Each structure stands twice: as C-alpha cells, then as structure tokens.
Image (cartoon, rainbow, N blue to C red):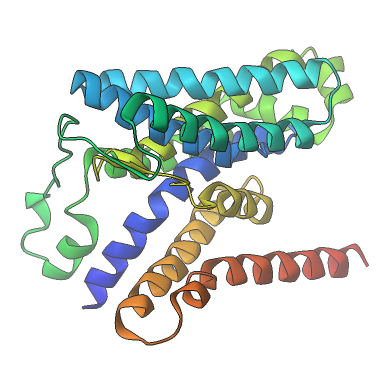
Length: 294
C-alpha cells in the first residue's frame, strides 16, 4: 500500500519536476520564467495533436520542443527590448490558454476533451533487476519512458549546473551580471541558453501530461507550472531541493485526488489542497528569508 502511494506521488510530480528543472536554469541567470504554465499547456496540446496525426512519439516531442522554443525566443526578445519579463510571461500564459481552446475547436471540433486513438501507447517499463525486492520494485518500476527520462535528467541537470563550465558560467551570470561580463563570460549567450533549456524541459512537462493518457483536456496543466515555479523559488540552485518540493506538491495532489474518491467533502474544496499548501510554503519561505536578512 505504501509503495503504491509513493509510486503514484512520483508519477503525479513528474510534470512539475520537468517544469521546475527548466525554471531552475532561468532562475540561475537571475530571470524567473513566469511562462512555465503556458509552455506546459501548449506543449501538452501540441504533443497530442502531432501524436494523433503521426503516431510517432519522437515527432511529437520535436514539435513540443519547437513550440516551447518559440515562447522562449519571445521571452528572450522581451529581455533584449528591456520589457517587463513578468508581464511577458503572463501574456504567454494567457495566450496559451486561448490558443489551445481555439485550436481544439477548429482542429478537433471539441471544446472540452480530445481523445486520440492514433497516439502511440507509452507502455509501463518493468525493471527485472528489482524483481527480488518487491517494495523497491513497486516504487521504482512500472513508469513510462518519459517518467524514467525525468529521473535521469535530474542527475544530468545537477552535473551540468555544478560540475561543468557552462554551469559555472550560468551561475556566475545570476550572481553578478557585470562581474561575469568583466570576466569574459558572454552574458547574452548564457541567458539565451538558459531560456532555451527552460523551453525544452517545459516541452517535456507538457508531453508527459497528455501522451500517457493519449488525451488532452482544456486547461490540462491545471496550474502545475505555477507550482513548479514556487519549487524553483524555494529550492534556488539546489536541484535536489527543487525536486523534493515537487514531490511534496505531488503528495498533496495525490491526497486531493484520493480524498475525492473516499470522502464526502465537496470536490471543489478538495481540489484546493495543493494550492493551499503552495501558498503556505511561500509564506514560510518569505518569513524565513526575512528572518535570515535580520
């Protein structure tokens, strides 16, 4: 029972983990990617649309990367023009909501739900090496290829940020842009790289929402991008702390869904549980930050 719950929590957290990994890169250069929510939503629609037309997972992911890269480029342009990055991010979030609803109606003739029979099936992958350890097998086995990709990318991002030259340069830009420039670091290049990486991870976050279910629902991201952003703000450059908060948010998401099945509490109230926890975490983070500042 416990192992099954942990497995469900991890699965629920994977979309937020992808988005938070992407948000971490822009946070490291001193820019918050407010558009995570919009990128995730657009990617989830593009993923199911291309998968429905091609029945090809690879092409679907490439299309997601392309769509989110366009948003990333728009944010980079906004930075270059010295526009307000927060306003630009909010604009993308609003635009993506309207865009996906418009495309659903005109491409699928639906305003609520799309179910694709042509999209590739993402089978659960069992790990035979864990077959002799039932508890660990239930926790670490039985995920699809995108979920396992998330696990691998957590460690890849840790190494990239903390053990490579490009990671040091990205962090240097975020610490002090002028000092980094004086040291010969191409600040613009590092900023562009960070936003493009953010777009790639956001693309994966949207794809892992819609492709396993072979369907898309209006507002499918359901504020996961915002929750991922909170994890980024709290975790900062500490990748594993960011992932930990995503898992905690995943736990409360699971709790919300589970209570809807077994309790008579109004569904609308239960659906607020992850967001109440998110607000609480932000309040505690703000309080601890002020206390450290003296």
